[in-house]
Image (cartoon, rainbow, N blue to C red; front, side):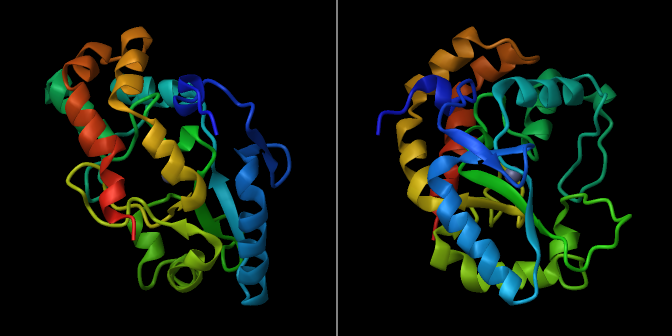
Length: 228
Ligand SMILES: [Zn+2]
């Protein structure tokens, strides 16, 4: 398959199609396995759903810029908000990277990666936060988490951010479709990333360019090590 740099960096949606109505775009090659995983989960009493899958470069950029500007909370490793007013630009860059990908460098740009939750035991008013506590013992998505541990592999899914790599915090809700994302990650060379940064326009772009090699090794290619 030929994979364009525009697709890898979230600027092309040709390979995507809608899933769960008309709000969430996924890669079309993932639909069959995702649907059958959801059907199997349903037989076991769960009601799995996606909170997000494909995110464009522009959307990631606006999330990113809002965090840099303090319009959206930036959380530390324990999910507590950080006061950015005393931090340098370099510190802010790496603080945001803990939970948010650099625009153009997100696995959510591929439609092969998504955030998952379980509607079955959620009350109507519950607001999903996507924090580790929700997926741990006593958390609202703990059962779904256990089910995924047991079954997701059978459908081709794994968690790229399962362990703390020293860069991105562990994200039990983030799943990836291995048959697809493995190929995409391989195509996402340092050259692709550098070319992207050369023309990108998000806030802290100068800092991102200065640390391009670290961003690439620690935040884009690192999940491969935990791909079991
Ligand atoms: Zn995610």
